[in-house]
Amino acid sequence: MKNEQFFDVLGDIDDKFIAEARRNSGKLTYVRRVVRKTAVACAAVLALVGVIWGMNSYIETRRLKSSDNTDADSALSLFTWNEGKNQAPRLVVIEYNGAYYEAMNMSNCKSLDKYNLPHKITEEMVGERVAELSSDSGEHFTFYRYAPYDGVNQKAVYVASNDNFYTFAIFCNYARIDTSLYDTAQEMFAIMGVYCAEDISCVEIGNSVLSSREDIERFYDLLCGAEAMGEDGYQRSVFSGMTELRQQEFCTELADTAMEIRITARHGFRECMLMYEPKINYVRWSINHYKLSEPLI
Image (cartoon, rainbow, N blue to C red; front, side, top):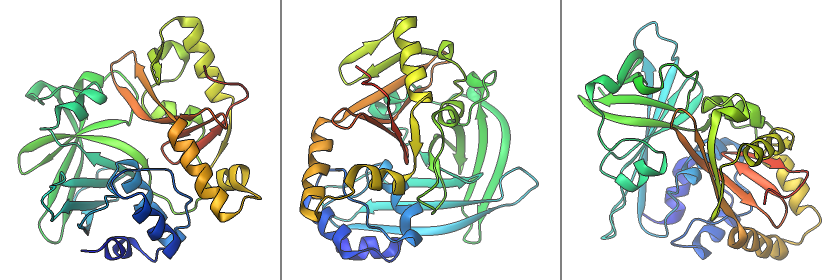
């Protein structure tokens, strides 16, 4: 399947976005987002988990719904895989309570280590059942709380089961198509069960490690005090007045200098969906952007 067909499944995508993806074939980079809003929700979550490949890909969507009186109204599964010889992992993204969750590949130890999660889910790790999700085609997911985090008010990770196979479901982003909306840093911290700087044990920014209470508090305060914005606000703030060519060049510069941020909470979960853009002093967290008042490092 051609790249154009892959993107067309998601929605009506601007040709400039397809051309940019083709130029950057084989790697995930920051691109100027010209996706029409009907496709933003799907494209955003796929970009977050890195499934824009420069090879033959296929995506299938199915609508799931809650079959009981749990707090889940509906869920959406997105399946992607490659048909070429460079086989890519099957990706499952589930919509639960208005947010997208990635079902982890339990054979990918590197990915599990990234979130500081165990390589195997044992019986005692499966907590309270919170949702039963099923589709007309017979697919079924059950969501459970992750028992080791039972004492923490968090929504970052659940245990999901499908045909008696257990996996972790990791929060990606909220399911919305209005790109002017955003979540504050406090709201994002709350998803991972962090409500103050004391709830953080370690912060890694690129190759730098913040472990002292003073450094962690400064990081937390800077992010919580930053100006929050959605994709629309970010585009206006960063790219306004630039030519199309300069925008593309600047995107490359941002990608080349960006640093991954990893936040480890005291209860153990490690959040990895943050990027620091030192060139403009912004932090990107999921589909939100934060303009800092001073450099992080």
